[in-house]
Image 1 (cartoon, rainbow, N blue to C red):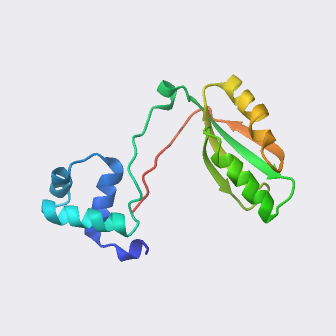
Image 2 (image 1 turned 30 degrees about the vertical axis):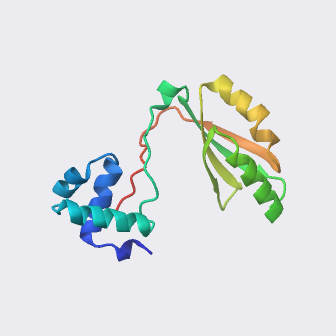
Image 3 (image 1 turned 120 degrees about the vertical axis):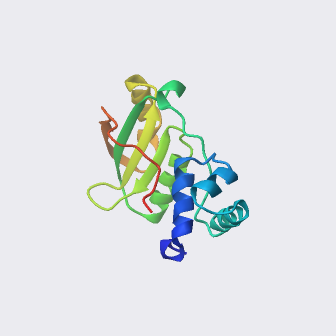
Amino acid sequence: MTISALDDTDRRLLKVLQADGRITNAELAKRCNLSPAATFDRVRRLRERGFITGYVALLDPAKVGRALLIFVEVVLERTTGETFEDFASAVRRAPEILECHMVAGGFDYLIKARVRDMEAYRNFLGDILVKMPGVRETRTYAVLEEVKSTVQLPL
């Protein structure tokens, strides 16, 4: 199912929910010009159809000891199915890694990680990342300023 399966009301509901996942059903109904019952039914259908996959609390990284944002390019020794699976399995076990994407281009994976500071990153790099299965080389990019960071998708 894709975005084309949504009408304007569904899109409005999703936009408001992306901005505030804790909004009450009554307030959501008011903002979207629907009855509370219709709002409840539509949100339930959006969850059942997989448009809404969950709800989270967004934390301030600095306040929870994860102020440093790092991106890492990873090049694997070999590009085989087994190497991909072993590397992906190791990535899933590393709590510092927030995102990991297999990419096309000059390297195999792009990792987004959060750590306390550069010393913590150095420990993560030496103790965890370069010891992951199949890693041949890495290139690190420390973020100096987050110009834009959002989880809200345009609808």
